[in-house]
Image (cartoon, rainbow, N blue to C red; front, side, top):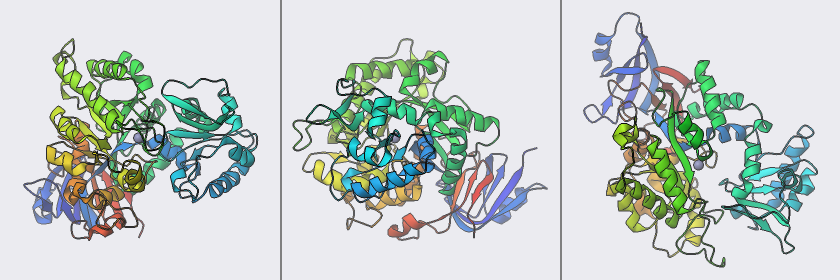
Length: 539
Ligand SMILES: [Zn+2]
C-alpha cells in the first residue's frame, strides 16, 4: 500500500490554471492525488495519512535545472577554486597553497579562472604555473571551461610540444618562439580534460552524493545533466542502491553516441528518476574565450570569427543519425553563426524526412531538439527557433555575468542576445538552467537574473537590455514546466496538479510578493521529491 501524505501550512502556487493557489497537497506514493484546502483534503485522507507541516512556506513546483554538469560540479566541490580572484598573482598564490597540500604525484585540478576579471586581463602561461607547482602536473580550466591552462608537466604528460600540430577544432597557443604557452583552446585541451574526468580526480560516486545534497538544498528536484558516461554509471549505481533522490535526465556525450545507438538507447527511455536524454553536440566555443562562432570577427583580432567545432556537413549528418535512432539532439551554440548553422541542420532534418520514417521508431515523433545556450542570435533566427519547435535551453546568469563582455565584444552588432522575452513572444518554450559549475547552481539566482537582467550587485540600473526581461511567472515556468516540456515530461512534472509527480520546492518567502531585487536571497526551506521531503533547512 502506497504511503499517503498531507502537506499543510503552506501557500502553494500550483502554476495550474484551475486552482492557482491552494493551502494543501495530498500525495500517494510518488504522485499528487489532490490539491485544495486542508479541510477538503482531510476528508479524502485515509487512515494512516502522515501530515507534513511546511512551516508557513511558499511552495512552487519542483525546480529543474535544464542544463547542468553535475559531475564537474561534484569534482569541483572537492578541487581548487580560482573564482573570485582579482589578479594573476592572487590566483597563483591559491594554486601554490592548494598544490603544497596534495599528496606526491597527484594532479592539480580545478580552476575556473577568469582572466577578464583580473587587474591585468592577460592570458596566463605555463611558466607562471610551473613556479608554484614544480614538477606536479596541473591542468586548470577557465571559468567557461573552453580553455585549459596547463603547466609544463601536464603538457608533457599528454605529449604537447612545439612540434605538435593544432588538432581539428582547437588551438595550441604558442609564443614567438613557437613554444606552447600552456593555453589550450577547445579540443586542444581535450586530453587533459579526459584526465581531469578520470579516476585521477577521485571517487565520482561519493562526490555525486555530496553534490546531490547541495542541489536539493538550493531547491532543485531534477536536473538535465550534460556530463559524461561516468556520471551515468554513478547515477545507475545510486538508483540501484536507493540513494538517488533527485530526478536525472541524462544527456549522452557526442563521443558515446555510437555506443548509445548500438545499445538501443533512445531519448525518454528509463523511469521517472533516471532517463536517457538527448545527445550533446558542440557547434562552437564560448564568448569569454573568444571562440564562439560569429558572423563578424571579434574587434582587433585579425579576422577571428571564433571556432566552428563541428563542420556543418558533419553536424547535419550527426543530427540525422541521432534522430534516426530516436535520440534527441541538444547542440551547444553561442555565436550567431553557430546558432544559424544549428538551425539549418534542424531545418534540414524537418525538410528531409528520415528513412525509416519516424513513425517506425519508438520515440522519434516526440523528440524535441534543443539549442544549449542560444546566446547571440540574428533577429530573424528567433522566429525560426519557434517555427521549428526547437527548445532554447538558456542560462539567465550567463547573461548577467557576461554583461561587461557582451557590451564591449559585441557592441553595435545587430544581435538578439539572451533574448528570452523575444523567444517567448515568438512562441518558443524556453527551458532555464545554470550551467553549473560555470555559474552557481542556485535557481533563485537564475530567476532573479531572468526577471531583472541585473547581476548580484543589482547592476546595471534598470537591467541590461531590459526589453528582454521576463516576468516572475515566466521565469519560474522556464525552470519547471519549460524544463519538463524540453524533456518530454510535461504530463508528469512542472505543475502541482492531481496525477503529477509530487515534486515541490518550499521557499521561506513568497517570490510573488517580494521585491524583485530580493529574489536572489529567498532561502529554500525544504525540497520534496516524489512525495518525500529530501532536504529541510536547519532552523
Ligand atoms: Zn554546459
